[in-house]
Image (cartoon, rainbow, N blue to C red; front, side):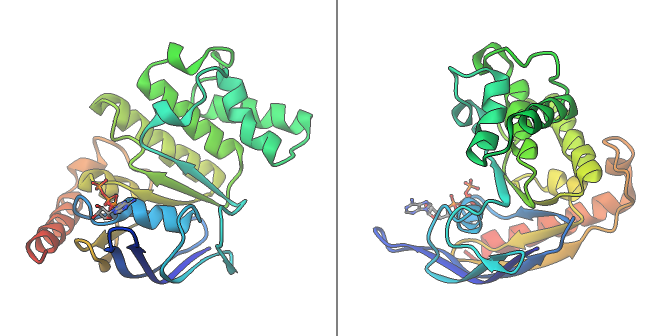
Length: 254
Ligand SMILES: Nc1ncnc2c1ncn2[C@@H]1O[C@H](COP(=O)(O)OP(=O)(O)OP(=O)(O)O)[C@@H](O)[C@H]1O
């Protein structure tokens, strides 16, 4: 579904080589997490994949088609939910906006908005404005907007970094439920090793900048993940340790 080959990004103005050489695939219906040391280029990678930032080299293909600008088949959820929602629009209007731009007919739009708000547990607040909601609820609106769009690939950039631990656990499980139900392909960037191992079918570990793939680890934990049961498994601790050691190595080699 997503094919990244030899991706390189140099920020020309300051001559910063953020990403040196990234190659990996994400298959249809996979949930793949990306972790790496702070400043290693995770956001740069996502922006290049989303077609928001021009690549210096290499290629990114979505469903076999080269990405040259923001593709129709992708949706993004950012860390800063506060800045990604329009404060003067209601929850319903925020979720509906990209569907209008996609020229989805009115009846279908209403169905998609209702279904996605239901999926994130916000069916009862369609007429609220974002500023009337808690941070966790605002991020749910951003997630609802992304899934209503019915993307082939959902890109998430540290989406839960700004919410409290309890909300974070709830949102992680929400993403797992949505992923299982809708069979979406998800590329999920996080700096949290536990979160990556808990969510991912694979975890890609990046080196320090200029960035390459250090490891592409299969997460062989049972499906039907559970915050208490899965995190208490000896295998969870092993995998977590393995990713942690890789990131330490990445930092030391900087
Ligand atoms: N617009 C820009 N211009 C110049 N350099 C940039 C720009 N954006 C990012 N960089 C540099 O590119 C490198 C990678 O940054 P990026 O934000 O992609 O990393 P990150 O892994 O997402 O960071 P963090 O984990 O702290 O969120 C850093 O050295 C950063 O300073």
